[in-house]
Image (tube, rainbow, N blue to C red; front, side, top):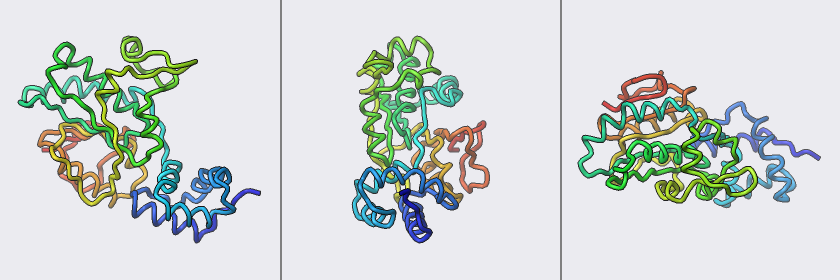
Length: 269
């Protein structure tokens, strides 16, 4: 018998997820029911009420629930114009100005790692023989331990590599089984993954970033939540630093001091 999500359970789950993670599930009861029904069956719970009670009392189960509710759809070189802009404009602007040679880039909401590894490969190509003289470590964060585990394994099906140049496939991957490939250790070592909730009140990074990628994450947020997050990003960027959002996203209607550069690219003044 199929499990049914009652309105009272939906509302308490929706309110908790909104408050804790910023994800807006308003009017998405069908989506929630569909994504969780199989999960609660496999986990042996008799109904949504019992499962939600358990999940909200156990952080590891709550993390699994949130992972199921947030779509982790990504692939290598997604929205490739951002990497082109980084190489053609952002890096040439910044490289002469970074005296300690510590380039700081954050992939916020990194999902299963494709974005962060694409950034690392792009930096490797850009710096070439000079790369050893720089710290180009990419910080990659997500709230889902499940996708972070996948990201650290760095094993992907060939289809997710379809947008990569052939030279990238040749130099930065090796076969890891039938139809799957693993990112080379040299590139894996250039990315540090960590669990991070973008809804925490303040970001207490020791140093500011030059570039932040937060793409296709805020599609789940309402405008007040977006505004709060965008202004936290602003505060932890160097003046002149860049914020990349998803191509379907905009900061239009959001009160912030970011300067519009081109679609989905903003600059701190």
